[in-house]
Image 1 (cartoon, rainbow, N blue to C red):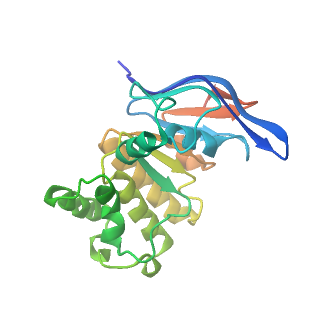
Image 2: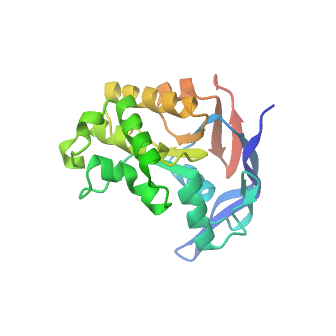
Image 3: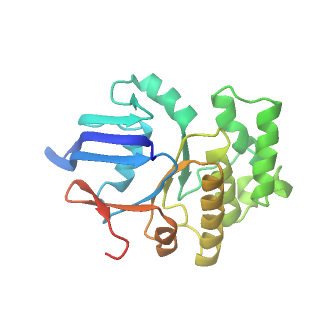
Length: 230
């Protein structure tokens, strides 16, 4: 039986722009189950990245609640949300976001240092991930010595290294050519499913849509379940 992992309850989000209110979400309700790969669709500016920020606790809703694994992010302090995010969320961005002054292995181990999980066992896990991604020979390279595809592979490993429950991906193949993007996507999908993680991804890629378990579209400030044929 499917277990709810992320729940939106009467979620609303608005911003003040040039003295005018801008509504992004209004009274959104929905559930993402444990182990699901969900793709978020919607026009540019519809709120896809905002929803990822709300799920991760980077941003807070104007009203309503978000629950992750039965914990309400809405009622957490900013500090507690930060700690929760470090332990439970992995991010894969379009722009890789690797630290240029750190080597591949140091970039990979950074989330473990932040959560005080760095030990011999987690170092072995880092090496295993690099082997799975065919990047073990790039261990001591710096990001500017890697191709775009290689940088995104390291970003994927970094997102998974601390074994988070949720992976949030925002256009992860957007800066890659089609062939490299497909290779990176296949690796991401394989690793996430292999480890039983829940992934929510913003993308326009038809290849990604074909791999997803569910499609959800943001339209008219609401979250709609979308049929694959629509």
